[in-house]
Amino acid sequence: MSPQQKVLIVDDEPDIRELLEITLGRMKLDTFSARNLGEARALLGRETFDLCLTDMRLPDGTGLELVQHIQQRYPQVPVAMITAYGSLETAINALKAGAFDFLTKPVDLTRLRELVTSALRLPAPGGASTAIDRRLLGDSLPMRSLRKQIDKLARSQAPVYISGESGSGKELVARLIHEQGPRSNGPFVPVNCGAIPSELMESEFFGHRKGSFSGAIEDKPGLFQAAHGGTLFLDEVADLPLAMQVKLLRAIQEKAVRSVGGQQETVVDVRILCATHKDLDAEVSAERFRQDLYYRLNVIELRVPPLRERRDDIETLASHVLKRLAAGTGQPAAKLHPQAVEALKSYRFPGNVRELENMLERAHTLCENKQIEASDLRLAEGNCTAEAGVPDLTRIDNLEDYLENVERKLILQALEETRWNRTAAAQRLNLSFRSMRYRLKKLGLD
Image (tube, rainbow, N blue to C red; front, top):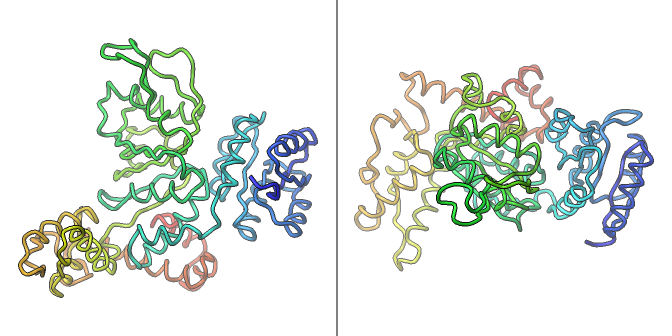
């Protein structure tokens, strides 16, 4: 770390300020201290900081106000919140407001050093955009919005719940969040929660000691240990049995795990990302998913749009897939006949991008003269619409999709035109701010 890196410490307790100053000074960092919001804002106006550590309770306001102030005026500065022990709701609110991470009092110095080191490795805002553009194809409004959110979430340690239909690219989104963040040098460990037999689940997640059960012929680390210093991606998290949900919640809360047959806990430093194609709210209501775990995992929700909501991207995606299929064969990529392009744009794609890839792979093999005709696609008639881009309105589910898609496009356009000023966007659409907030939440854009 460069000795020029500066950290702003905001706390009204002299003992805490001194502890943080000494610890960070030993890390060769320059520290500036403020006792309240007013002093912090003044220092931010005079100096350029690489990190801010702030207490939640300040004499003239809250650390949450400071997080919001920094997000608006100095978005390149990561902020970590220091909260009282057990103030989980406060910490979650800070993460939702844009805080990088949080610490609880009494401050664990090892955890503090890890947090500071991680925060100072953050790339500049927007610096990851080129890599994201290259991996996450498409120039539709939903995709532009998704890339912006990935760029922002990569600069946080908040747990993210990635929602979306099967085949829409949830694991790719999780990988991008990991790769563009400060944990990019650490492991990315994906796990399909629905693919692990329930009797092996605890051993898979937390590891086991030799002899702890029949067949345990050697010590084996679990997924949490494997992801230490990196990211653990829990795909299809809604498929976890309730008994395992309890153990997962404890591991996340305590940041420590105990292997099967082990006597001591092992500290783990892991960022949790999760995904499912199921409606987690409905799973909670049906008591198939624990509400307390839901709140820990769903600090921030990121919705991945289905392919039918971004039909303008289909031709670009198809061209990319065909070039990839041709790579290494020494043959030119197959071309799509204009009627085949229109047929793809009029298809509902219940399997999303994954279905498009499988469809093109089959068509690429079967087509004549390197040209894919509409007939080569073998589209299922029940999922084709009356005309390209417009759902068959005789089916109510299609009509709902269509109307929701139109609403999303209009709101995203208004947000982009007003530089994501929600109040101004609401005025442009002649909506109350409360109505705008409701629609953003409903459409997964908040």
